[in-house]
Length: 65
Image: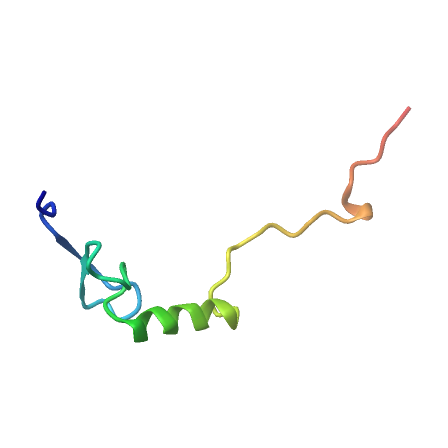
């Protein structure tokens, strides 16, 4: 069985073409260096997922009876 047509995608780190196929062990990155640079950015919190600030007790609507 032959491998399906391989495609290239931009490396998330350096934007150079990266092979997106099983034979590229660092996919979607172009190299181990770019993969480790991305991992380091997450580890040092350079990348963050935005989240809403949780409501405090004073922010809750007051019940009126």
